Image (cartoon, rainbow, N blue to C red; front, side, top):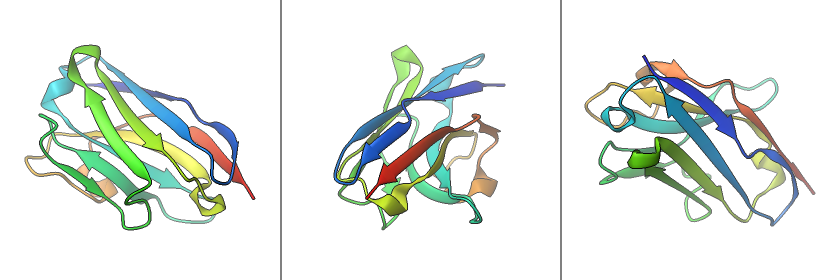
Length: 124
């Protein structure tokens, strides 16, 4: 079982940048597909980005393509999300998640373990 802890959230002006990190422990990090999701108040949790075990494949939601970049450092057991050109509609709690799936899932149901989340607020 893997434990996940997110960090790096905060308040930023529109057009700014943030880098989220997700530290993993308790299991072999490189054996999991990793993803980022977000949930705004009153809305369902939605897919943001995901990355395969060996960094060979990434997937992004259309709403963040060209602005966000997912990456991972397997020796450091850490997942990242670089967020640029932030918009007020990016405001949400951001969660990292780990999946034992063979493919790269893009729905919450494909993930087995979740962090507690970190708040990102983008002011206009």
